[in-house]
Amino acid sequence: MKNRLSRRFNDPSIASSDITPEQVWVNRRTLLASGLGMAAAGLTGGAARTHAKELTGLDYRVAPEGPPVGEALTPFADVTQYNNFYEFGTDKSDPAQYAHEMTTDPWTVSVGGLVNKPGKLHLEDILSGFDLEERIYRFRCVEAWSMVVPWIGFPLAKLLQRFEPTSDARFVRFRTLYRPSEMRGTRSFTAVIDWPYQEGLRIDEAMHPLTLMTVGLYGKTLPNQSGAPLRLIVPWKYGFKSIKSIVAIDLLDEQPETSWQRLAPHEYGFYSNVNPEVDHPRWSQRFERRLPSSLFKPNRIPTQLFNGYAEQVAKLYAGMDLRRYY
Amino acid sequence: MINTSTESSPMTTWLLGPGVRVLVFMVLSLPFLNLLWGVLSGALGPDPAERLMHVTGEWAMRVLVLVLLGRPLAQHGWPRLFRYRRMLGLFVFFYGTVHLLVFAQVYIGWRWELLLEELAERPYVFVGAAAWLGLLPLAVTSTDQWRRRLRQHWRRLHQLVYPVTILACCHIWWLARSDVGDALVYAALTGLLLGWRLQRFITKVLRSRKPSC
Image (cartoon, rainbow over all chains, first blue to last red):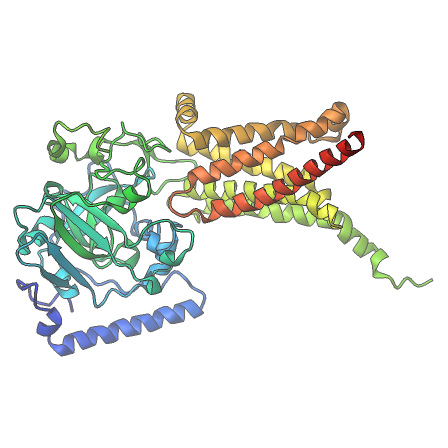
């Protein structure tokens, strides 16, 4: 259904619900409701795994180059069941188990700050307002594990250009949804993160062609635990920079604080570029476990500078001391 | 004569005696067997290392809390746990050792130069290793033979469990990243149990001094 919505240029100030024929979105709601019903049935039946919402197939241009040479894709099940999304709990399996409690339709992303045309993007605009393409990227977590994932999305630059950043805009700040009633991890008394989760990029990083606004993986819309409906992927930075379930994007003239930086500034910097030479204070970053890993074949491989994307991005940091700006 | 008391029926005697011992052993083995099954069947997910480290470390700590709980409970009329302290202590050592082996296998790939680097640069690795080294002599001297051989020194040696507990708490505390819940629970429990001993120790010292002044 979403596939057949015609590609159109959206005026960001007009909600798509105003344009979309009512029958179409009423149908979508019914579909969603029935999906929820199934999820509830699954719960009472004791099967905790299956309440993933129904993922929709996306219309996209397939990555011509395929996965990086000699590196296999991490299977879909692993990509979607081993996640860090602390809004749903700190255990790797918590997001897959509890993220279904988050409502992602309707969804609105507000874009503001130093832009000429502040406005909003709705779920429909996000899923069908941009030409989607597949990008197969390495994904390296700061915890020293990594995956190879076929993401689907569009360059962040395309999104930002629609709202016309002013010449003063030097940084971009992103915020994740913060809705305690649907995010049990944020209700934990001992969690020390200052919600909502917040991340940031320098404007040249944000405009870099590798920086992807991501709406799907493995050919379908993102499951909630992977950051539905819209997340960032910055492949040369540690995974926590690739903020999930974005509801606000603001252009600023000064460097925004990020959640992890606020929590432990000596451990997490603003840049957080993947760098085997700069250790996390509590563990080495020289190696990573490429998932799936096993006890007897840990699949431990050396980590590459900028996660292997140095050729494309090193020039962004020319002359910078990467130890100081970690 | 008909014995109506259930206390002395052979079944009950067995259950309260060796039966409980076997049961405790089985219960404490379960987490390990479960992990072993997970490793062999792939049920631990795409990154078993993390799960293995977490679960083995957690059980070492949980059983350590049980060990420390033994004496205060015995003091208050429930000596059963205290009777199993050797087995419990050996379980602490066992889970700690598996924890260490997984670290060597997955995190440093048995490369000693990496181990030295980790020890030098990362305090939580250092205190974790120190805690394990503290447990080692306790496990070795846990036999009756060693206990007889060491006589009064045995008790003093086994008080090493107190610094080991403090090191283990530091290890957990330094590992916590964004949610300090677990670390707080262990710190509170062991703080309470060590505090109880400290208080008794102080009272004892004060009492023994009284007559002399």
